[in-house]
Length: 68
Image (cartoon, rainbow, N blue to C red; front, side, top):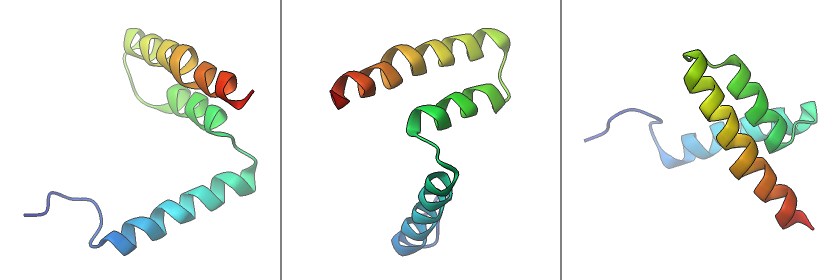
């Protein structure tokens, strides 16, 4: 039983690679992409604040620390 997504694993990998190439071509880092996502997703204001706080506090900050 398939619940959605891509028809095959190869199709999913191709879509992933296309998104990654587009982001790389635009000069987006994962942190920039996450910040854009939080800004543009349709959410209630309180949910947006919580998402943004988690993105900044846990995801972006931990990646910056791990890079050093």
